[in-house]
Image 1 (cartoon, rainbow, N blue to C red):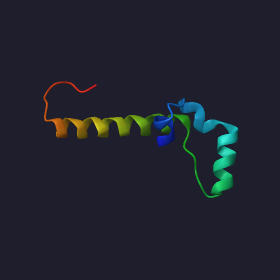
Image 2: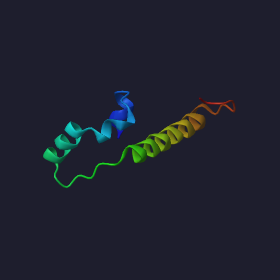
Image 3: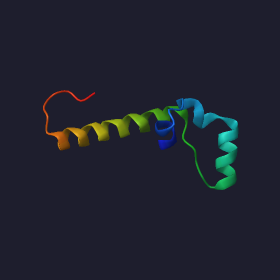
Image 4: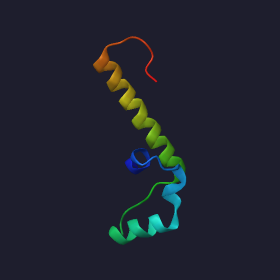
Length: 64
């Protein structure tokens, strides 16, 4: 669901009818996550990136 991050789309984008039709057309076996699963996925990516940034910078202050 990197498309949500890259294009600053709302989480409900994955539930749009046309988007689901497009994905099913491109790959009929694809399973799309729900809006809530997308939120969890994006939050986890954010946590991973924050941790990597903290390791690289080695700064003990807060990273937003």
